[in-house]
Length: 169
Image (cartoon, rainbow, N blue to C red; front, side, top):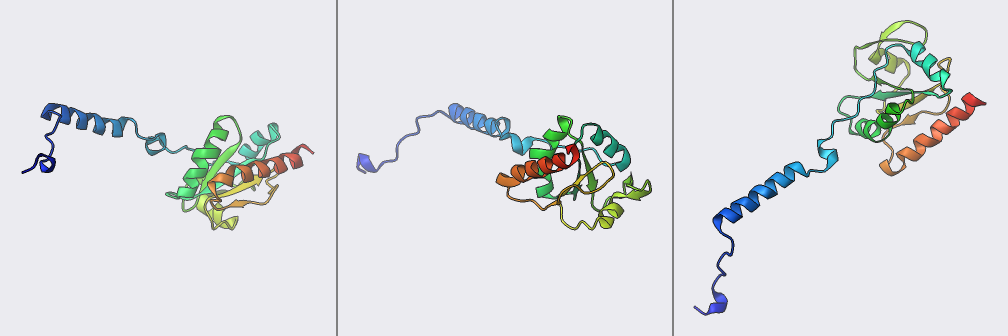
């Protein structure tokens, strides 16, 4: 057989090959992108809307209520990329969950489940952001749905700016 047709001999020893394979596997676990291993941001559950509105009114910010649905990828994107970081910086944000039996005091002081409140507000799309003023009035139009991730932050900033303008006169 001519030499140009013979397969080349492996230049790596068995030990070197196994070591390389081990490092590759380790690297795929250790150096995985942050998003793949990061836990989803958590927002505080709404427990008493009158109390949460009082806290928001002290900073003259709207209370943002995120209506969410368990397992919703658009809800997770909104929480992880925008609302979670804002809430950690002190912005008044709470979450109300569709299909949840968790109790909440509504704007009239009555105890309801999150799901009952969602139905009362006629929310059918997750995520939906509602921007509330001191007396529970909706200050600006709701943000419904996932929007394109590239523009979600811009739309959110616009809504907050409009709501603040109304609150701060």
